[in-house]
Length: 498
Ligand code: GLN
Image 1 (tube, helix red, strand yellow):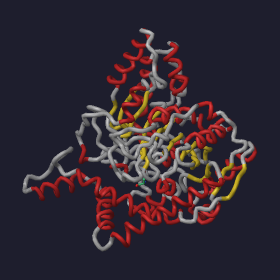
Image 2 (cartoon, rainbow, N blue to C red; image 1 turned 180 degrees about the vertical axis):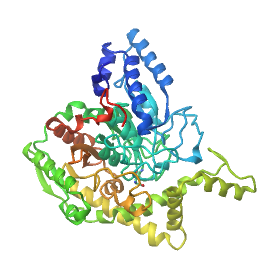
Image 3 (cartoon, rainbow, N blue to C red; image 1 turned 30 degrees about the horizontal axis):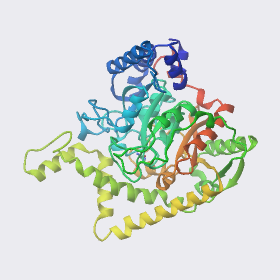
Image 4 (cartoon, rainbow, N blue to C red; image 1 turned 60 degrees about the vertical axis):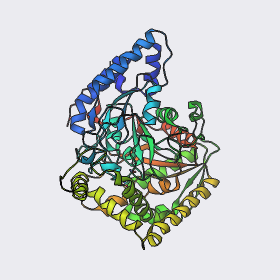
């Protein structure tokens, strides 16, 4: 298959497989070959599954030969973040404590992807238990950014973003608690959608902060992002937060122009960010806003007055939930066990050896925030501020169809730059965390590149369960700009590893 093969959209691949123009085996083989070239350099995967992928592809080809109808993702390779359970396949969450853990079941999203005839090609690297913004907190490997291997791909779903950017797979899934799909998407120049809280069942997603966690897709086109979201969304009885309002997106809706839509820009937040917001990102935002205006959208200023408290609020709520979710890793039920003294000594040895520094920090922060005497002062107050942040968004989205804002204050930063400075790392999520606390959908779309060739993503935030409108706005941008169609030199066919 030619270079076009791995550059093709998931939509085009599925159409070719369904019509018999290409076999699923041929498609999967070409992506596996690309990953053979780049995955070791980029360290995108913790576990690859070429045999299983080729077997699935062959079964799809046999069904086509038997004239059975195929699903909307027929033969399309998809990579899965390593905190989402795939039956019989190692699922470590990037943590030593889950080394060798193989879940005996598929997550809901995996069942849905299999039903759509997608082909799972492996488990991608991530920050341990999805805590981080650079994928440097993985216990196993540091993933590199395909646009500049000396830089981080973002995180925590860094492997999922990088594998799509490097054309090792046209699609992947990540999870987003405070930005972990949107931020790596922006750093790697691909689309990343955090759906509305409740739009996708988390059954089989390893829990980090349950009031925030959402699974979301990465892709190289707006339409492909919608295709995956349509496949995985909706009610599932095994996650009581999942909702029937989350319905598949009609791709025709994405082709409707933006004329008539109102787009809000939170000017005060941008002013307040001052020098912390890179000039290249500020310029990209201004130019995107003008492009939407030229296309007939109405631009308005929106206020999100409580968004400035988002980081402080998130770092009380998310660690509090993490400290209770991670209590289950006790050396008894899952993964590794250390120490052979009494039970308490075994717990201490297992958890001490199994968790990395950032996870330990979060457990300590969260346990403290929840402890008697501090609960009202910290956790309860954070919940109240969270309500105010949600109200800000709902009010703003009552006046506009989508909010346009940055995803990140800077493009991808060098590996190691923030590794020893947790606060600097936390601040890199300043623009993604507000929508997470509000529970509204956020989309990172490839907007442009800075002068050094690093991708810049921008964020569209939408009304609850209105993923289609933010995808439609991004699709309108994609029709006029080429940022989404560029691929990093190392991923281009014939290009060697750096
Ligand atoms: N970077 C944020 C954190 O470390 C968000 C992570 C996420 O969305 N999973 O918590």
